[in-house]
Length: 119
Image (cartoon, rainbow, N blue to C red; front, side):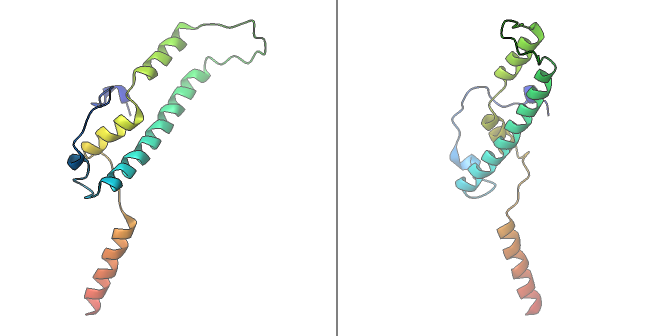
């Protein structure tokens, strides 16, 4: 996913609580979904950054040789300017781009279907 092309704001935005709980009907469930997605995004960004910075890794033990690579600095600045994972996850949730399911509700629905089939 290209995070730079996301419509997520870079700064914190005040949101209407009712907009966040329209899909789940529960603000706490919505926040839990957003938090899990933010963790996924954070791990993905961290992996991408680690892979890109691994190219510049120096395996020398001398502290005297510290090199500043312009490309490395540009990569770091790019990732610093990205919106925070929580903002990206919230924007995805508001735009209904996050897939989530509730196994407990699915189980209850299956039980109701079995009860109606037996009756």
